[in-house]
Image (cartoon, rainbow, N blue to C red; front, side):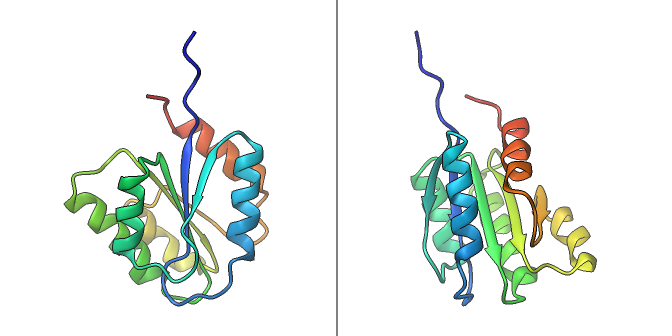
Length: 134
């Protein structure tokens, strides 16, 4: 009779990027799919993102960046998670990410990069397939 625990997603906007429409659209789609979404708001540091992820006990961190600083912020989040011994959070990236930057982001531990125009249902499916309920 135990109710299945909802997948918890932290939707984060690292860095100085001030555009949040895309992450809000994604957050809405994830909520519609039955997930709990915590949105950090704009201009979060990698340390704030990791701290919030730990406090909120999330299964997924979904970061969106349009400013071009993904090559700093995304790996920094992965580094901080590793420093804290956390290896069970699925980390996704999105936004304006040049194709040539994707391999190095995946190499540092980002599970997938979703660019502009990605169908939100593709992201929902990706998360549901990869997050194993505790």
